[in-house]
Amino acid sequence: MRRDGDGDACVPPGLWQGAFARALAGKRGQKILREIERALLDMPERRLLADHIACGAEVCAIGAYATWKHQQKRPDLSRESIIHNLEWDHYDDSESLANTAYLGTQLGMPWTMAWELAEANDYLFQNCSPEERWERVITWVRARIDRHPLEEVPG
Image (cartoon, rainbow, N blue to C red; front, side):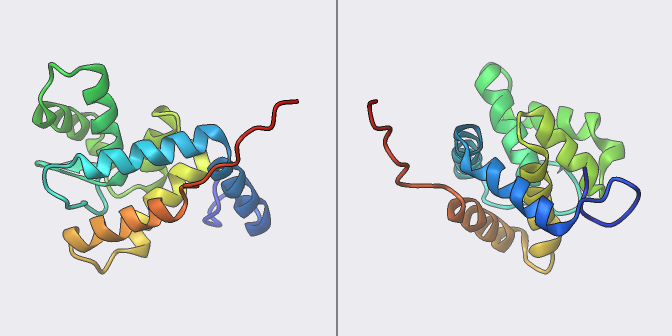
């Protein structure tokens, strides 16, 4: 499912936005958004790369989330080695929004969330410096986090 208009798998904008809204509204989506926020805040240098998942010591937003998730599973591995492995594993995926979004789905993100995050990182904020991109992406993520979820009423 893509929304870019290329190929037979294109989704009409209304269906795409509905799927994206549902992905964000659910418990799973909110948990992932909070984890992405944590991943961005845990970055030693608040800079985001564009057009690549990882390159050198830098990552894109989904690369930051992937690095954070790997650090949670394997605290014995250094951040640098995790990023190096991401770069190695996804070298051929560079500059591909679909491949970056696919990595997001491998990390548990709904497709629409992964696509929209990758698109924000690479296209919406394409004219930003890496530092500005980090600021704008974390603002984008925070704008989608429900800070006051409704409590369940016993029933």
